[in-house]
Image (tube, rainbow, N blue to C red; front, top):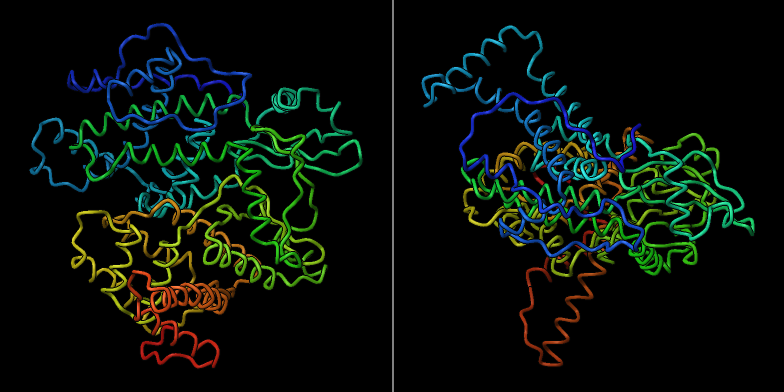
Length: 562
């Protein structure tokens, strides 16, 4: 594989496209002053995003500062975008009536597309599947930034159709490694010495490769087994160049809102920039690991966080204790070690409910490579580069939504969705109520244990794609984490139910947290005279939930949804 520190060469020339002078001037930045930014640096990386600008001239100047590299990268990304958009545009033209198209070239294109479709022996479903595969492969070729974009889109059914979601999910595991020589050079640069001067030994092949780095097993001079997580070469420079290209294209789209409406393109780029710069800051990852360790200090018999060696760790390299054990999907070895796989997944589910409902701080990427089962049954968590945080208000809103779902309170659930940011501003809530009612109708008479979280997400995908849904970034991480956990459960036990496994612990954590919150509210108002409104509806809902939980009485449910 060609080194990812090098930018990809331009693709074959595209046919000339007719465009206005205004659009042409947008797509072709003015000539560079000749002062290109460096592609690599030996200085400590500034792993914080620059303050983004929405000024078109400044965005244009940012890209121009990269010189010819910026132009070449812009071409690569634009050409990939054209190839991605063409099948979608063709399908749109095919479904239009020829007489409704106002321009002659649109009617000609309509005729060509319809003729080509009749000659094709491939159905639309297979074409979509092939296009999704092409997109995954193209993102892989474009490098780490775009692999990360694909991984992000894989949990955004509000942005991508279902076929693409399924294919992009493969980017979580199938990422090509970068050459060992580059990894050794990066280790030497970060440690200030050659790896063989610091470590007793380092394996020649990586244990795993990811979009932003890869991992090697090693042994310290004192005999301690460790792993070295090393960042991909020139990663920050590549990301900054790609972000300049993305911000430039976003600025063009915002200058031409008639092309695609209703999307804050610069906001999307800003959100992605914030996320990726947090993830490549390995010093921040170390702090995340220590915070996670502190949150689970009273769970030492069930949860373990590997020791990190700060004396060997930098902003681009982490050395941590090597943990053996088994993957959570290694059914045979788990059974042989006396750890029932289903119980392991239930414990994993319980730890996530604690993270979400109690801590408000959670590991956002719990795929099988980031969680191990120790021989004594404890769960060991790795890789804290991607974490999510939930504010008190968001946690309270999630619990309100839970009560609205239990009570089938459609207006209340729509209100909670607005409060949590799931509906874009400007959409009339009354228009959305029938949609929510239709979703509930699909599950009338279905037991909760029979519903799969991923199936529910896929069932909602078309609705979210068709309506003005917006999944807040923190909830994107929650969906990613929970669908991953359920997928692990289904691998080890086809009858596994995430909802059945989560329900008793969810009630326990909700009662514990909300009872303490409301108790403080009531005491503050009645005893200390503090201002504020007590939600007596929530008090009543908590009382009913406590009664059902601790007295083991199921709620009356004429529709059969439990």
